[in-house]
Length: 197
Image 1 (cartoon, rainbow, N blue to C red):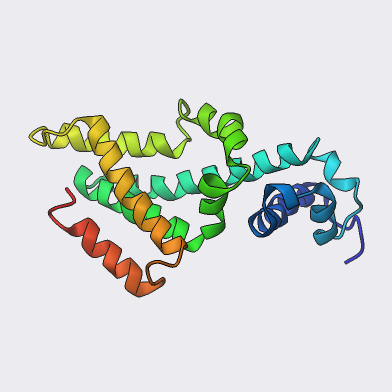
Image 2 (image 1 turned 180 degrees about the vertical axis):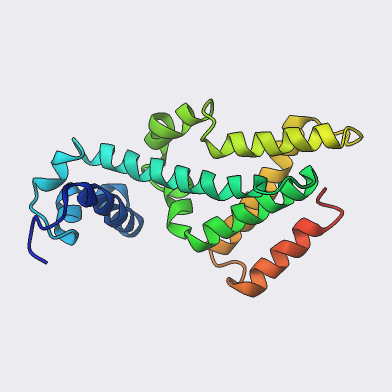
């Protein structure tokens, strides 16, 4: 492929995709527009047609990660089933998303770019229906409406459910738990346990 051979719309997506890989491997300090241009096989100035600087590109990568994560969690609402089952399904989607996309977890929660990213991207999504936190809040709210005898508050349930599945996902991404089908079978047993909900 020769330089500048991307169609205009494709280059932006490719910059985000290849940029994520570089960011994951080299961190914020090692990330540069020049490196992304090189792996995309375009001139050093080409990325600037889409992003004014590396922070804007990183923000676009983070937004894409959050959008894909949210889409995964929203699958829990595909069936008009029991809210308890939906909340358990959301937990399964949470863990499986990060198990399949560990680079997104490292970017969103462990990257040395994370501090400014949280301010630039994540905080503005907390009041947005597309932020994953909103999906979790909706699932817990539905559960509380269907199971009013559960004495835990909505906030307590959010912290409990989020903390459990996030902790499992971190263990998997860090290699502390085995990956693959066996790990997901274990996650399924945990989520289906009566002690979970």
